[in-house]
Amino acid sequence: MLRLMGTVCIFGGTLGLGVVWQKQYVRRIEHLRSLVLMLQCFQGEIQYGRGTIPECCLAVADRMPEPLRQTLKETANRVNQEGGEKLETIFAEGIEKLLPQMSVKREDLEEAFLFAAGKSFADREQQIAMIYTAKQRLQETIAVLEREREKRCNLSVALGTLGGMLLLVVLA
Image 1 (tube, helix red, strand yellow):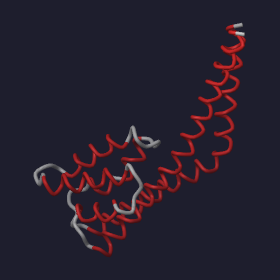
Image 2 (tube, helix red, strand yellow):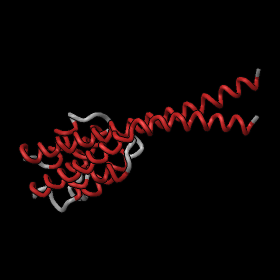
Image 3 (tube, one colour):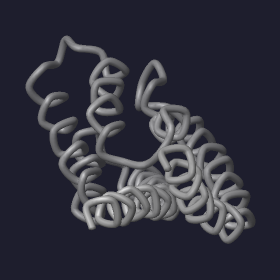
Image 4 (cartoon, one colour):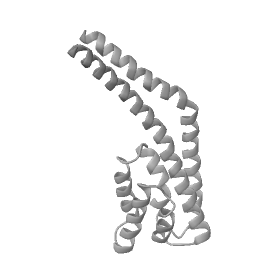
């Protein structure tokens, strides 16, 4: 009886691990879409709103899901409070905070916030061009992930299941 319970626990655990991998893959696509939406909002704010970075961050934050909302609000507050700190540094620290909370790679976040790393926010045309480029790259990544979604998700669950079976055979 104890052996059967152990078998069920091991198998359930490895199957659950496969499902977690599957969910992370799907969440990565959702988070990338959130980053594209954020870039679209920034593009609109820069192009038509003509606001400063803190104003743009606050306006965009209201339309973003968590954890992007909180990070953008904190960024706006820090820029308003600490005039001497570089904007690049503030956004880099924001990226570090977002990494553990979002299922995206560091490169994806750096790509999304690249427009804010420029020398100044005054050159709107260059900012808009950088946002457009970042948006295109993120959309290409989403397209690739979407094409592979079904295969990867099925593979994750299958590897979890087969890993559990292998572990049970080795332990038996």
